[in-house]
Length: 387
View 1: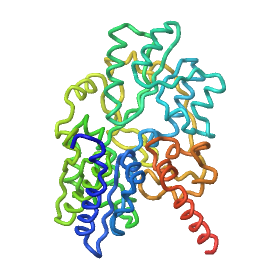
View 2: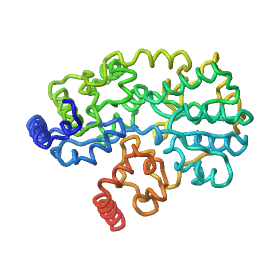
View 3: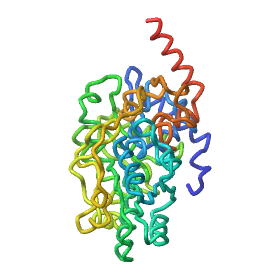
View 4: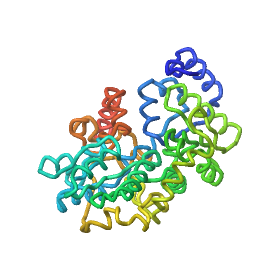
């Protein structure tokens, strides 16, 4: 296949759907967690969910990097911008995520803080060059996909002698999160959120390869299939997971062979390893503290570490009351389970990160299944009131 249309072919979709219905055994359920938020949106955008038999369910995982960032780290970024008077640069999705008391970066900007949306790390370096008398901080977030550009920016800043540039590093690691989910008693023992297999992330795997998922697949005996973003990618990957479950296998398979290899991008991995190292633990929204799940700047580049350059006060941070974003990220609840969805919480007035991000589950439900979700939520509230 060479063209996008070929990955959205109606007849091929019907053929794969028929194969899934044939393979999915009656009396058995298949709960497949798609870790990547891009998969969640593909499932809803192209109606993949509606092509699945009733006993095949998709469970939405913590695959949105904006969503999994804990409120405390967002509050820290706001403090750096307001208290220290820096130019804070970050990607667009982070601007509207509500922190404690619903204070977001865009609200801090409206109150006078110099916070700028950028499209790449090179934009942040350009701002540092153009403002030699100002401190410029790049608020770095994301999975392994966006980590190499951050490492490159730090190396370039040192090579150019940009002493007014630093990074507030919040990059997190996918395999550690999958391991944490599978080892969590809440998920391992709850029938409602039992996970039978995973759709592995696409862009992340293009960097790290498919090999890092092999330990979790072997230890927890869960199949992982690296899936592309197109509807036929997702459907074929679901079929591969189902076939593994039926045969009792628990391997890492790669459907996205046109992009992903087992080894990944060795050059990108080397740059990241040179500049960054693994944190002992890091907090994820919804998952709590996860060991070895994030990166920090190595001591050799400590001069570019915003956490060491700026004093950040200890504070009490908290989620917006009644927001179910943490539970949704764990796969314990769906957006329709949230009392705020579509009432108080909308894309124009988000209460949680899951409604803000272009990869968030609530944003997917709102964009592609809004009326159905609101009807389900209303019915559920009615049942609870009657009880």
